[in-house]
Image (cartoon, rainbow, N blue to C red):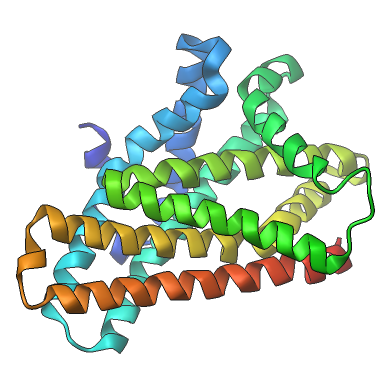
Length: 272
């Protein structure tokens, strides 16, 4: 596959920042190909094509981390190792989000409305939970945390049953956040393009980055277990350690998600 020549898992670990530009390329290509070939369904197809280009990276990462889990007994080393992988996952996600957001902003309104129709529908359904009646901060926190916990569960589930399939959940979230960034940008653009774009990015990335980090952490846990089962490593003595490491990652992801919800409800409204 051509995309495998652009970046390898080992190169991504050595230069994680490069994944930002890879993410922008993959999302941009997916966006234009989907509009060209499947115009009426492009808001979903562009996410699928972006995912298709990224599968080799995610699958390679899951496989490498499962191998490390078999060889290493030092928990701190494993966490550091997982941290390197999660870093380039985050850069890849940021590339997806920025790529989708920029095209949403610069393309003609009619074209961007078609490309992000499903994403706008998702945003409206989320906002509907907070309109029409008074919602306290505690209630908002509960709604947001439980909704994000549901997404985390699906990221874990997809990574376990479909391996790299969890990237679909994360690429979809990138496209939704991009649509929200574009909408917020348009509401502020009268104050200057650069400042409006910077504020829009900060508004959603303040809580968005830890939130997505939680999803990637859970996806990594599911992927490690999935690879271990595929390779029949569940028959080995090391499978217990692999399972313990995966459970640690899942618990860590829930903790990060809790912090992200606190930031979204109690910190972000104060800043924006």
